[in-house]
Image 1 (tube, one colour):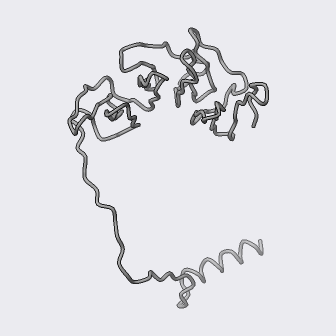
Image 2 (spheres, rainbow, N blue to C red; image 1 turned 90 degrees about the vertical axis):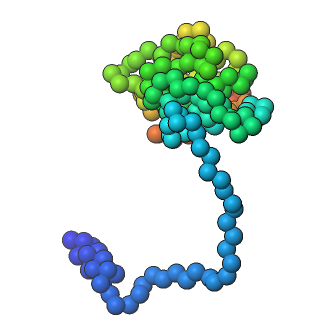
Length: 192
């Protein structure tokens, strides 16, 4: 109780005290800012840019409505569906997109969704680890696609936020319950 009273007194004193407790002075002088240019997307692209990829001289902009290509300051592309929340590129630089229901490539190929173990399980992240294996993080675990879906039991009910792979081939998983990696040095088991 004494701690609560002291905290209330301290907060009131800091808010209403005539003494300036915290101050910050900005040094005078010249400040330089990089010159920027506004880049307009096609009208049907929307403004919610989810991810960018560079493939040769082409920039691929994935928005919540589809994939759009910029080459020599000229945009092409058409909207697919709305609600795209994530995208990844495979080893051939083909972009794969997903909303919370479907995974498909810019070439029109489709992969069925991982089996739903919970009512509104959503795909939160995807990453190709080789030519045949796609990892899909969901709100209820991690799945591996290699022609069929297999649930990775290490992450049975954990929300997966991001998946990446470093130059040494180590796979990193960011989740609500921490950070994991899969490393050949540990026999390709998941370590936290």
